[in-house]
Figure (tube, one colour):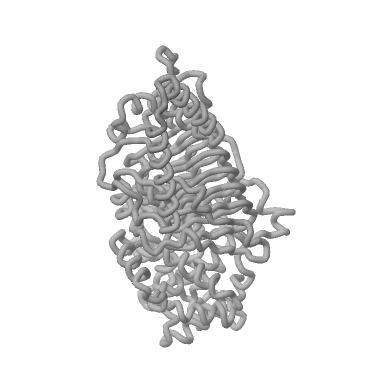
Length: 572
């Protein structure tokens, strides 16, 4: 009987969602992590191992590593967010936090947390590598655009870089998981070192695989323990542990590119053709407004009216937890989508300009990169929304976490149970309360485990304080606040903004409504003649049109109007 063929790959989510896109603290080096690994095992009876409680991590981070408490909590909370939980469990935890319970009861898997701290090195800036080596293009670090051309991208999305990182640091990763008695005095392994089953199980945080290229995905430890593979993975019945050299050799031999990663999606995923994009962009079953659904099917198929957007996805060929949708070069268009194609997907929106994009489905994560002068209305995002290198964009979203880097003049209307993270290179950020709704919104919130409380939209965190100024952001003044209307009809029960508006913003809206009522009454009682009313109406409409043009609202209204009859459609 033929031996089964095992394929292993590095999981994308720990890097995509878990690695902060800043250089890590210097104390997250291998030298200090080895010391922590030994220290937690020595104090296992005190809440350090096999699960590390928040008070114990605070003691290590603040007392030993000299980190600020907020930063220590950020990494602890960030890792906890990676733990796979049902939406019901997430909602239960949100209720615990909102009832003023402290975070003292929170604990995480110790070994996996050490691996999580180590992979923060993926965004470490190295003068040496940037000058002479690893940062130069090569077969492992190369990534591709939707047109098939090589392009640079943030490392968190580059699955080829994830594989190279694990391959290059596999020795360190395994040594970090070894019991102290398996290490030399200088914290290194020997030829006789043994890796515990718990350590291999922890490594499943980063690695998974399949057998004989089957679509069924298994965590690493299940494959390593599988009877037909034990001789190759190095497991011994006698020691009930793995041989360090055999395990390392097996891992190196089996590790390959992620078949569900971004590169595979762009190379062999479903690249939606020009005519097909209209179908992807709209689901007429959820857009009931007369004429509107037809328009959305035309906007991407009318020849010569707009620049062709590029959209690719792998949802037709991967397990539900590995879905990716990549959208690029949407230009002067209004795109809207709510369907299974998007649900629980990692979404990357790249190089979009002067557009309005509505993705009204429960999402796993969203990255908005190198976009300008656009508005993004997103369904609830289970993990993180990261906005990078954008100029003058507006993002409206309920998400678990929001992170910002290198943005200029951007506005964020958010509802989030964690503090928005301001990383490096941002200017003129505006934070405002979440201010819209659509009929399925609360149902989608339930599916992603997001509640209305707690809500820290107005309490951002400057992560790199030495390189940031508190004046980099502001809270939107109530006088500038207006609610946002999603211009599509869908089935569902949500009729108002979840959780309502903060009192000061609701008060500003009420006062504005009162002024409108007073104005309407004044006009009614003015006793104008028919001719005067006509001239007055023309004046109001003229001023309103000027306001639409000045605020950019005219472009959005124009994009919602069907094109003139007889427009020629593209054939391909």
